Image (cartoon, rainbow, N blue to C red; front, side, top):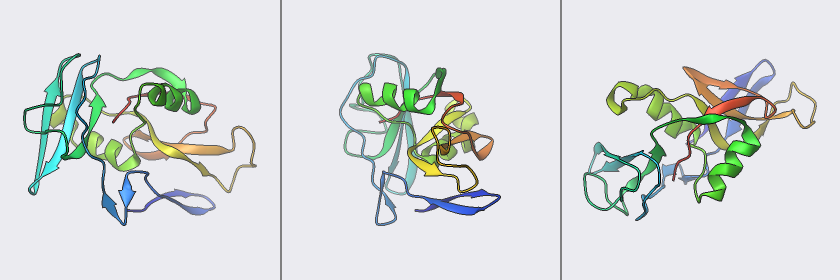
Length: 161
């Protein structure tokens, strides 16, 4: 799966870290999260989900450890600049959602009970229209559509696993 960020200077390819050979490969782990979370999985041609309260386990339900899918926090965190948001997720053994995961959540907002906005993407993307400086690299953010912000701008986020 290859996503493209389109800007005035052309398109820039974005390769998700959960992609192997064009196939989504993230697998749900046996875990518990301290905060409320949603578990999304893809099993036998079906798209399934489980809602968990903080302290809940991924064991049992529609999605089980080993299924292809992901966990996402139910509540967005306070706005941070991208490096800080990504670092906070990593410190908890998580990551920011990949662009595809964020778009999937945004497109299924009514089904999941929340609207996804905020940082997405774990790889910096150089914008050829901006000089390479501290603010010259950018990941993506989801706000209705895929758009871009510089790493110096703050945005809300959710961590996933």
